[in-house]
Image (cartoon, rainbow, N blue to C red):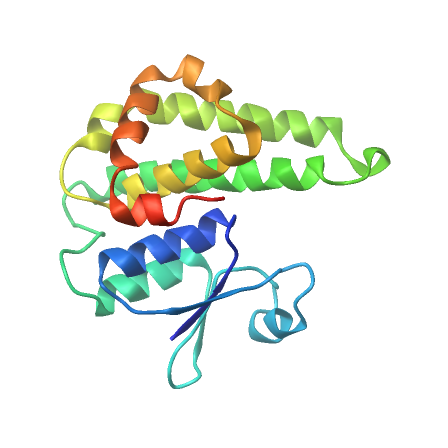
Length: 194
């Protein structure tokens, strides 16, 4: 199997984490979604990650790829039935945090005349709300075995901190302490954006 991804993509990172947790061996190919013609042929949205299976079938988007890995991998599921609607809501907050962080970064790299102050404010505020929500639920986030809500929180925080700094920590001390502790997990540490 080949995973098309990028070193700073939080969504590619999420798929890589799940593959590592389930002992799935992947050929990870770095690609630039803005420049790759091959990616456009594989995914009409031209987004990463993209997973090409051994038989040539193509799976798109990190939520689907992660569920596929969970279905074929070894070890406990990362999608447990217990409290599924609650932890899946936290999963979506982490995913939304990553999305807002990526969108803010895309605004910041545009030429000055093309940047939108309105959008930058919207994404910054969305990130702050997501961090506050996760900070308020740190106890629930931390309990139990590894789940997708924890992975999504890590990938969202990781991208935000990599691209936008550590200022979030001042308002979310519980979440910051949890994040620092879980970053010792090999699948998190090995996939941290560089």
